[in-house]
Length: 327
Ligand SMILES: CC(C)(COP(=O)([O-])OP(=O)([O-])OC[C@H]1O[C@@H](n2cnc3c(N)ncnc32)[C@H](O)[C@@H]1OP(=O)([O-])[O-])[C@@H](O)C(=O)NCCC(=O)NCCSC(=O)C[C@@](C)(O)CC(=O)[O-]
Image (cartoon, rainbow, N blue to C red; front, side, top):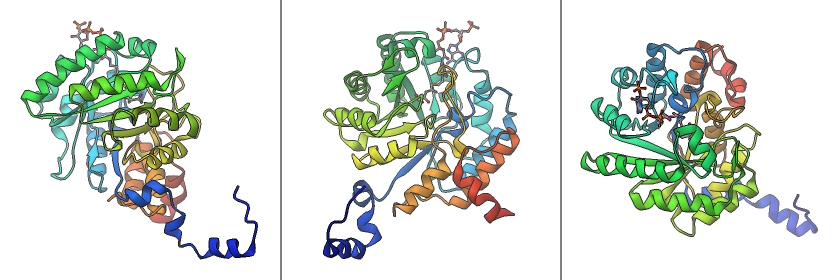
């Protein structure tokens, strides 16, 4: 807590405009891009099957909120993640808006080919900074995973596809425990060298704190600029917003989130959803940042999906504002 020791200092403090009291990074980077991962990261772990048309309606509603990137589905093995088994149908059926990107997650060349067939323009590849998680999630080592990613990127270049890279377990792993920042920097360097335009740093089990997130991002900034990074925080321990602010303070300007806080990873038992997009937008707007997102429409989309999957929203902002806006 700041202790004000003299009346003069106290008066100076009171005279500061609200903008001066905001996070450093927000002042320097007022445009924050949100990558909505609810339809993919959010729904992939849902135990009951969500009908394709519901997924399509959900994505269409998200497309109307002002979000500019919506991760739509994943072209992974349906044996591993059955919920994403209707990937092609979902992708083909959604109404694509010109100013919105619809990236899809792919684990290998087979997934990439399916994504190309339906006309995806951007793919996301994924690996981990933890060896054990890599094996659980993709049945291969980190090194083998990076070889698969190289194959994906080589083909993607021929088709002018943008490739975003995810790294999971950037501060901790459910199997390997604490992850050293150097392990993350090593994988991030490899993905950037291969040609990923952005690396999304995933705190898969939401175990990060201000300190561990700071140390991890700071270390990666030895090899790349903040413009090449995104932060992806699950909220298992309620630290997501704080951790996101920590990354923003270091210059990161892209944040992943899931409307209504949907989600969890099928290979990280107990991991809860991503930070809720509604909570993120509320926080960013409160800091004076621009996101282009209409909070009211977002709340409606979050309420829609929570209702159809029969799950209370994990967004505090949605809980607080839904009745005010809609009842
Ligand atoms: C990578 C594999 C495929 C390896 O799985 P495998 O079993 O080693 O692969 P395989 O090559 O032996 O294939 C097994 C079967 O899957 C099929 N197959 C193989 N590939 C595909 C494909 N692309 N699309 C459709 N089918 C596929 C393949 O054809 C074969 O079918 P069969 O001959 O038995 O009938 C598997 O482990 C997999 O799909 N893993 C994905 C797991 C996943 O989706 N996890 C969640 C996403 S990552 C995440 O959530 C974290 C993140 C990104 O959000 C960030 C964070 O929070 O940390």
